Amino acid sequence: MKRFFLLAIFLTAFLNSQAFTVRSNESLIDTIKSQPKIKYWKFIGTTTLNFNQVSFSNWALGGGDALSGTAGLNVNLNYRKKNVSFENSGIFIYGMMKNQDQGMIKMDDRIEFNSKLNYQAIKYWNYSLLLNFKSQFAPGFAYPDKTNVVSRFFAPAYLSLSLGMDYKPTPVFSLFMSPASGKFTFVVDQHLADIGAFGTRPAIKDTDGKIIRHGEPIKPELGIAVNATIKYKLMKNIILDSRINLYDNYMDLDVANRWNIDMDFETNINFVINSVFSTTFNSRFLYDDNIMVPLYKRVNGAKVLIGAGPRLQIKEVFGIGMVMKLGRKK
Image (cartoon, rainbow, N blue to C red):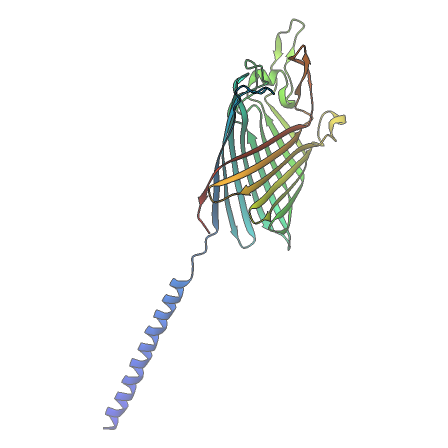
C-alpha cells in the first residue's frame, strides 16, 4: 500500500512538471511571435508632375503663349543598425517648355545620386564616406541657338568621393567635413573636351588649327569639401529642405585659382495641400570658376554672344502639381 501511494505521488509530480513545461514553452513561443520583426532598411519615394500654362488673346500689354511641364522622381533607401547607417538618395528631373518664339526647349534636366556611409564615433559625430554623382539626360543648347550642343549626358558628369566626419546633433541637421575629397569631371563628348569645356584641358593645335593632341575627357581634383543639410517642418503643411555643398581644390595647377570655392546651394519649400497636390518652390545657386557661362548683349533688339566667363548661376522654379508617394506608409 505504501508503495502504491509513493508511486502515485511520483506520477502526479511528473505529470505536473510536464504540464508546466509545455505551458512555459507555449508561452515563450507566443511571446516570440508577438514581437515585431525589426526592419533595418527603409524605402521612401515621391513622384511629381507639374504643369504651367500661359495664354494670351488680344492682350494689349504684350506677352507670348507658353506651356511647360516637369516630371520628377525622388527616392531614398536608408539602412540603420546600431552604430552603422547607410543613406542613399536619387533625384531625377526632366522638364520641357514650349513658347511661340523658340518652340520646344529644355527647361530642367538633372540626374543625381548621393550615398553616405556612417559609423558612429562619439555622441553626435560619425566617421563618414560620402559619394556624389551628377549628370543630365539630354543635350543642352545655349538658346536661341539650337544647333551647337553645349552639354549632353556625361558631358559634364561629376563624381565626388569624400572621407571625413559628419556632425549630426539633431535629426533635422547634418554637417559633413572632409579634408580629403576627390572630384572627377567627365566630358565624354570629344568636341566639348577639345574646347576645354567645364574646366577640362583643351586640345593642342598647330599653327594651321589642326589638332595635335585631343582634349582630356577627365579632370581629377583633390580638395576640401564641406556639406550642410537641413530638413525642417516650418509649419504643419510647410517643409523646408535645404543644402549647401562647398568644394575647394587645393591642388589646382593654377595657384591663383586654389581659393576659388565651388558652391551648390539648393533650397526646396514644399507647401502640402493634401495627399495628392502640393506647391513647390525651388531655388538653386551654382558657382564653379571652371564653367564658362555665355555672355550676351542686346544689339538692335537681337541677342548677340559677346564672350564667356564664370558667373553665379541662378535657377528658380515655382509650380503646383501632383505628388504620389512610394514605399511603405507609416
